[in-house]
Structure formats: C-alpha cells, structure tokens
Length: 504
Image 1 (cartoon, rainbow, N blue to C red):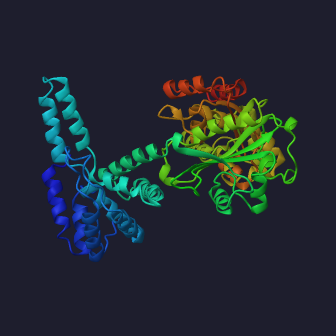
Image 2 (image 1 turned 90 degrees about the horizontal axis):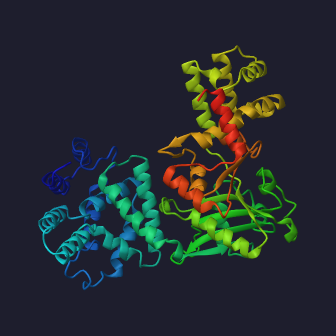
Image 3 (image 1 turned 90 degrees about the vertical axis):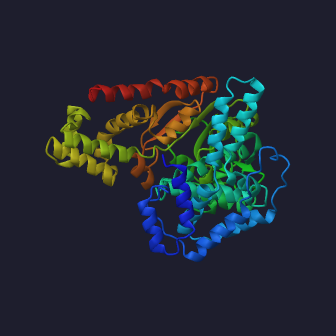
C-alpha cells in the first residue's frame, strides 16, 4: 500500500515533468501507476489534458449541497468527448490514467469519515446511519459526476460504452495495472448495468423490411457463423428463421445483442442445414413443420458491455415470443460451437506425450488403428502423430481416419465440456453461458460444422444445450450455487468412457 504523501508527491511531480525521457524514468522508478508501457504524450497534449480535466471535471459538491448544486453546462461533456476522440491510442491511456488517478475518491476524507463511523458505534442508530450515508457519498469518485452528465447528452451513452471498451482493452493487454484504472472500469460497469437493465431494453425482430443500417450491422456483428452476402442475410431473417435483437433508446440503431433462431421439425444436429441451405429463401412457412426453435448464434455487439448480462435475458424473452407465435412449440435448444476444444486437446496430447502417458487417452485398439492410419510407431511417435493430425485438420480428408477418430474425439470433447473447470464452472465459455441459463447439456453432434473454422476450433463437433422450460430455474440454481452440470445420459455415458479409459 502506497501512502497518501507518496501519491500526492507523485501527482505534484507530474506537473513539473517536461520531457518524455524524464516521464519514462519516473514511471519506471515508481509503482504508483502500474504501467508496463507508456508512450507519453508530447508536452502540449499533457497540458491539454490537464486543462481539459481541470475545466470539465467539477468538484464533488459537499454532502449538504449534493442535491442543490446546479449541473455543469452541457458543453463540458461535449468538450470532454471531443478531446478524448481526438487522442491517439497511447494518449488515451495517459488521459484515462490521469482522470482515474487525479479525479477519483478523496481518500483523506474517506479515512476521516471511517474513523468517525467507528467513533459513533455507541451512539444512537440515526447518527450511525447518517455517518454511513456520508461515508457512502464520500466514496463517490469525482469523475462519476462527469460520466453521469455525459450520459445525458446526445451520443453520450454510446461514447461511454466505447470508453469502457478502451478501458477493458487497457486492462486485458496489461498496458496498465493501475488500481485506479480498474476502479474506473468498476464504476463504468456499475453504471452501464443500471442503464442497460432488461426493463429498459426493447426487443426487436429483425426482418428484411428492417432499416438497411440495422441489417448491415446485424451482418457485420455476426461473430459465430459469418454472413457471406446479402442473399445469405436475407435467408437468415426470412421464412423458417427468426432474428431478434435488444436495442436501447439511447442507442436506437445499435443492436446490443443479436440472437438467430432456426424453426425446424426436429432439433438440428448440424449447422450446414441451417446456414448453407438455400431452399427456404422464398418459401412460405408451414406451421405443421415447425416443432423446434434452434438458437444457433448469439453475438454481443458492444465490447464495452462485457459483463453486463444481456444474452441470457434475450433468450428468455425470445422463448416467450416464440411460444406466443407457436403455442404448440415445446422444443427449445441451442446448436452451439465449442471454441477452444482443439487447442485444449493439442495441449493435452503434448502434456501426455511429455509425461509418457499417451496410452491413458485411447484404448489399446484405438492406438493400434491410429498407428496403422498414420504409419507411426507405438508410444510417443503415435501420440505426436495424433497431435499433428488435430493441428492440421488433415484427418478430415480421410474417411478411414474420420471413422477411427470419431469415438475418441467425441469422448474427449464430452470430458472437455463436462469435466474441465475454471473456478468450479465449465471452462468452455459457451457451455458456461448456457448452463448458467439453466440449459441441459443434451447431445454432442459429430460432423456438425465442417467449415474450416469449425474443424479448426472444435474438430467439427457441436453441442445442443436444451432448454426444458420447467427445469431451467432449478438447473440454473444448481449450477450457480453448487457448480452441478445437468447433462443427458448419452453425454454422461461419453464422460464415463473417458474416465474409464483415462483411469480417472
């Protein structure tokens, strides 16, 4: 913990730095900012930052005048937005560091209030509550007022969403490890979670008649199965398909999260029939052929809303919409990719090869077939040959290898989804998302995504997470509270095979 005098001394010295080399040396010698790299703005930009922030970040009103102080002029918010938008990427880091560090919480005042709260513990309840309220107000960062005022100008909410995206990038890239930056991120996330609560969102069905700007963004934001052309997009919003998005009044032409749905007779077991089939482009829907809703793509479009729950609410709202349109519909399921499976498997094979435990992954007969198919010697050579096959996806070109590897990869994939954990939750992010929503890990599908991307990411395997509506609340509670994954018997059977062969 760095003392307040050290922080004040550092802040005072910032105003005196006049040369890039001096600033670099000072930051290297101090841990206050936590920056690993810092391309320092030229003196003119530093001066501009100081002047802008001094002018637009108003002092926090006193506790007594907090509801009586007039709001700052709108021009302050616009000036801040314009100045920030004009900065280069490296200068934005310096600007956000200065904003979060110099215009955050008044730590001295908070410390004094905390001591006062301790001193009042033997007083009456009213006095204690008042001091607690003062302390709560004192914990408000000074820049929070500015953020609130920016949200009220035109384009301000979108600006703040993008600003948080910059903050998240700084944190994830470890460009700065400053606790002040992390506190700024926490403040932004808290405010955005309030502003984008589900009650303030609008559910829109996207059709071919929707505004061109919206359709273009739906195509641009599709992250799971890229849209190839306008005909492809037209089919994805046409017959036997539904596309829904959440929008917000402050960002009316920006879809926040987009869900694509296929209306089918049965629960789909491959993506090719959904995104590459053109027979339904001009056909009319036959309600008798619609028994299931398949959620085959869900994409969050705003990086700055990471951690703000939207996707799970969107699925629940869409289920209600579909039930209203098709009262007889009872089957709701995802057809989900399995990002990360191939890279996890390559790492596992490398680990077992180094430890000489390759025989624990496949049965004796399976290893013999791999050795014959790859013309490799038993033991380490066969393990390395299998790893290279997975890395290059060459096995997909051989019908024999595909047949040999199907039971192996399905078993390993079931374990990856069910058994590999991070902090008790499913390691795979897509699995974690649907399990949190209360879905059941229902079925693994072989050759479900034969696109180069699908083979490279998950060996072509996809998974259905099925939503049994009467059980989702119970499943969600079991997963969130006890980390229990609800899975079907076939999935559990594959998991059991893996445990038996791997001696787990």
